[in-house]
Image (tube, rainbow, N blue to C red; front, side, top):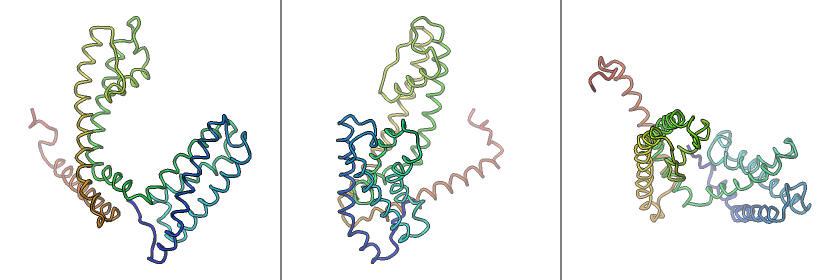
Length: 273
């Protein structure tokens, strides 16, 4: 659950005075990283000292912001969504002092995560996140169904194609990647055996249907948020609280249903046959 963080109106005012500065600082650090990357530097220590010291100043200021918000908001801040985002913005910098030289490029790439800090400042981003938070129960159900289909398709196509000459399913990892990407319309597979082609038709049709269901759930969620987006009186944090209560009610109903189903003499599903 998102924590709005600030405990008092006076605290909010003091923190918000720095918002324009930190928004500019985010973009400055991202622009600096891209310029440094374009210059061919493998990491900040190997490049010009200007980039290294600029990053140190930026990370120090963001660390001060994180500690100030922690002191202002209390012990719940580090585990709140906004606290985690603020931590992600500074953690790669401090981790960089303890990792091998060859990892510094990857650590530097994590500066892009600082753009997530705009979640605090952008009502639009908050409402987009609200969509996913509202429909997370439906997404979890559809995602589990998709996982079952993808895993079934992976092993089925692997068994059908593993010994075929010229097959693209000669190992389990490649089979999983190809099946997963195909179900999301990001790739296409071409089985060479008749059994493999039949298996592909068996797997990909229900997978496409589930993927379409995921898109439909998200589309319905975005449609519901559009009315709230144009209403300036709607507070995203209040909407998140309403969504949290609804999700808790769904969980409670699910637990109650499982309890009733366990006591049901037909719980094994014989009545469905």
